[in-house]
Image (cartoon, rainbow, N blue to C red; front, side, top):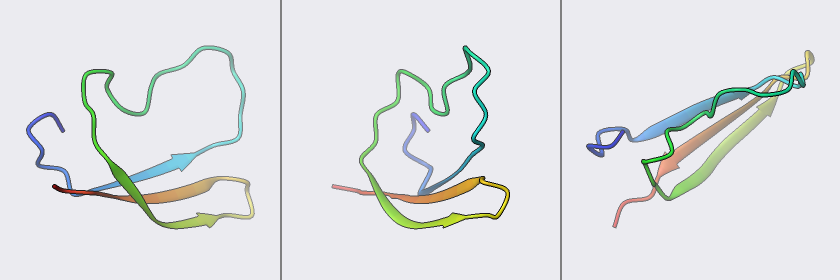
Length: 55
């Protein structure tokens, strides 16, 4: 990620609250993302497909 080699991110969000947790992306990496698509499954899980905006 830090080297800029990632073109897309696929994030699956699960609607469960358990207190603390881990970040989806590292703190030291910054990228402009564009939401390309989203899909909600019957289970409540949501898939977000993001592309990295270059330049």
